[in-house]
Length: 194
Ligand code: GAR
Image (cartoon, rainbow, N blue to C red; front, side, top):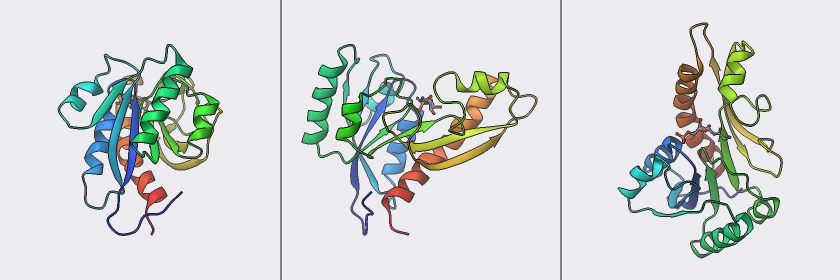
């Protein structure tokens, strides 16, 4: 991954499907002076995604692709990414699976945040499974996306303690709070020189 020096920022795209709190957090982070990123494009796979409400109040370019015609959509998306000179894609609650060829075209330059301590609890309904298994800890992970689900190189993780009082809702809230700290930290780690 390139390391930036000085005040230059790299252009990123964020892919969302839902509330978009990670997106909102990254947009806020991008506006900080010491942030290495500029959010140039947001893609939503869902026209009803909560995150779009916030996005419409910003000037950030966005598009909706429902991925029903995945290969056609991915071709169009790659064109947009190329035209806009996007260097990195950050998935933030993006619930579609990108094809192997799409991932290859953006080799090593797609990041994801997952609400568990990977390699544990890959996939969906993470918090439900963690609570059901009476785990004492969970957390969140920022990793590079490869063609295997939630299995790419781990950039950073944050552990979160689970108490007896925790349920799916409280745990997801606790973890989301940590996600919002972890994603910017991971971007800084990847993109800036120490
Ligand atoms: C986040 O907890 C994120 O880690 C998770 O979805 C939530 C999205 O929240 N992602 C996944 O489960 C990906 N497999 P947000 O839309 O408010 O950012």
